[in-house]
Length: 86
Image (cartoon, rainbow, N blue to C red; front, side):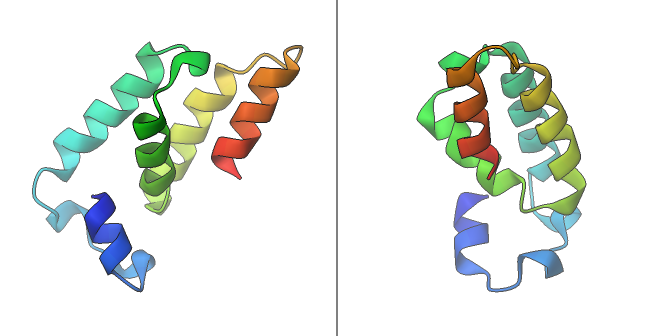
């Protein structure tokens, strides 16, 4: 998916359902984001989640998971979340 996003000029024009394996990949990423503690997200998971948010239909689910895991009282967690989602 990262390769597809990097090689296309108009991400909004991608028919995500037509990308082979996309549904399985989407489920795997959402599950990984949900299961892992925010502070232990691997760099590769962060990069894929950021690229994944290029799909407008996946933006909201990814942000909901990440923001629910962020404590407003933990400055470092808030900072990392903002960095990841900005």
